[in-house]
Length: 221
Image 1 (cartoon, rainbow, N blue to C red):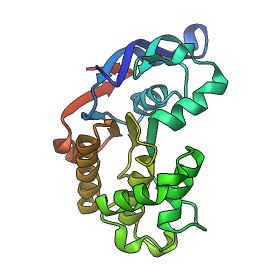
Image 2 (image 1 turned 90 degrees about the horizontal axis):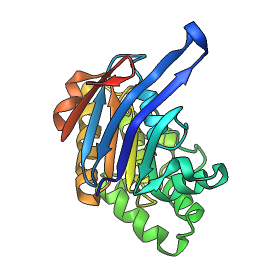
Image 3 (image 1 turned 90 degrees about the vertical axis):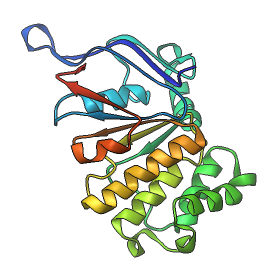
Image 4 (image 1 turned 180 degrees about the vertical axis):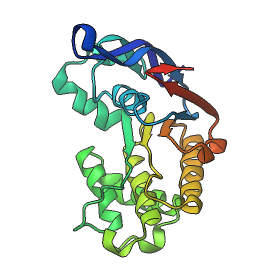
């Protein structure tokens, strides 16, 4: 069973001659535990594909299923719950809350997910998995960029997502730290059986992926 299934997905903007196809008939599937890299230049449709996959943007045409749930059939007020329960996000910058410690960044997710009872144990296990257990009491300004991204990955995994989406997660890192972060994403995808999609323009990071899909002008090669 695929964790993510996109069928004939189209996203259009504008009208008439000014119409632009951000995505054009995209078919894309990701199985649990697979780490898939979507590569392409700026403006190719990478971010739009990730937004549609993450139920942040409804497509103009086609369908998107997350764990056999057709997101097009989910009312708007339920989409937020779907995202919270089934999807984890890793951003270009970690977007950590400056006033919270590393552990509390994760415990907040447990609280919002209604799993406060197991939150501390889950948080400590994840911080150990990403090599941050020794800095659980620090705040974001006390961490390096790579360390903040490690915390961001742990936070994205706190809701035990079926689908993990990473949007240019190494854009602000040097090549060595970028490779460490991508390797960590791949390892966690495999261990936790999370279908993981990373979009990137950096061809030097593709060798850690189980599969590489290239996108140009809204179409997958």
